[in-house]
Structure formats: C-alpha cells, structure tokens
Image (cartoon, rainbow, N blue to C red; front, side, top):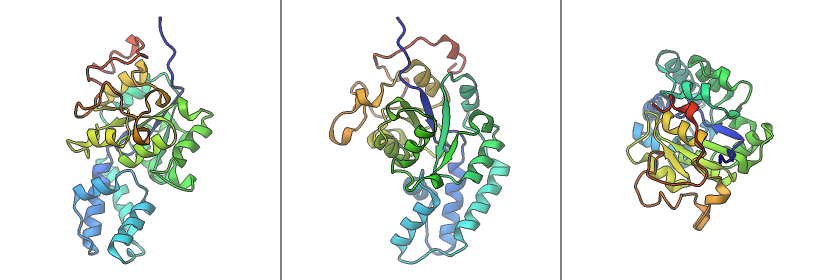
Length: 272
C-alpha cells in the first residue's frame, strides 16, 4: 500500500542548488577582497561565506578586519558577478529536468537580492518553474542561518513548516532549515562543493545528502527522507538518520531503509 507523501512543499535554495553560481561569486569575492587589502582565497570564501547574504558577509569581514569595507565594494562585486552570470552561468546539471517532473509545489528561498535571483533564474531558463514564488532574505529581518526566510516562504505558500522539505548546499542554509522545523536535504552537485562538503552538511543537521539532481529526485518523489519530527534526535535535535550515521558522506544512494518509501516509476528517467 502506498503511503502519502509527507511533504507538501519543496523549498529550494538558489545559488549552488538551482544555478551553479557559487564558484563564480566566490572567485570574484576572493579577488575583490584581496585587491582592497584583505587577502582571501577562493576556498576560504567558500568555507566561510557560502549561503550568507552580502550584508552578513560584509559584517563578518569588517569585524574580523577591524575596519569598514569601501563604500563601493558591494556595488563592484555585484556588478562583476552579474556580468559573469551573462557569460558563464549554467543551471545545475539535471535540475531543469527534475523540476519539469516534480509533482510537488515548490518555491525559492535565497540569500541573494531579488534582482540577482531573477537574473540568474532567467538566464538559466528556470524562472518559469518558480515565478512568482521567489523569496529573498531582504524580505525578512534576519537571513540564514536564522529560520526567518524559510518560515516566511512557508507562510507565503500556506504550508506548515513540518510539511516542508528544504534543499540546501550551505551550512548556514541547513541550520536555517533545521531551526525552522523543516526536513533538510543537503545538496552537493554544485561546482564549489569540496570532497567533505556532504559530511559537513550532515554535521550541520541535514537528514541526508543528494550528490546530483537524479539523487535529489529520488528523495523528493519517493519520500525517502522522513519528516523532521520523525528523525530529530540527540543534542540540538540534529537530524541525522540513524541508518546513515557513521558512514562518511550520507547520500541518497546509501544502502538504507526508511519507512516512507513510495514507488515512483514516472521519475525513472530523471535518475537514469
């Protein structure tokens, strides 16, 4: 007997989940920070700032550096990033196909500004999958890792947090989803993800990790991840499934049995 899918809404992060933009942004951030006298490498930017808003990133740097960033720093960085979008940006491999076949309502909740979100999604032809349900951290008081943005998105979509599943590539985003009382799938298909990125997402609270759009499709459609109220455990309610704990990076292809598996032959070509 088939079980009802426990999820009513999929909340996607944008950068590094829908579009492969984190590599572009992190490279430019590192170059511009180094240029103004705050030497920073690409890998440092990825590890410290992925998933954070520009305002949060700026605050962290200024506190560490002990001086304010130039007044035009953000404008220069955003201009360069948008130009790189027009010449280099691509959608995450397989994500358009997944979205075409995903039978669940979906929205975007991102730390990026609205104009940057729209540009990235339009250039990669993903905008029609989400418009008008695209939400930015500028719409709430506190961005990720605070839960505000995800709770706002759920409210706008008239869905209880416990019925939401979040797809996130960043530690800040995973923590925000967990704090919102939602189930979080870590996603490591972006070009910025290092070898240990999946394990770091699980340590932050992701229930499971998908390494590709195909694996993500399996998890979303077969309900192979249980709602957070069913898997929350341990100190801080870390949502690591028992069957996956202690096996390195926890992926959708791991040999696990979860009670909510639902046959989904219509998604077979997504994961082929």
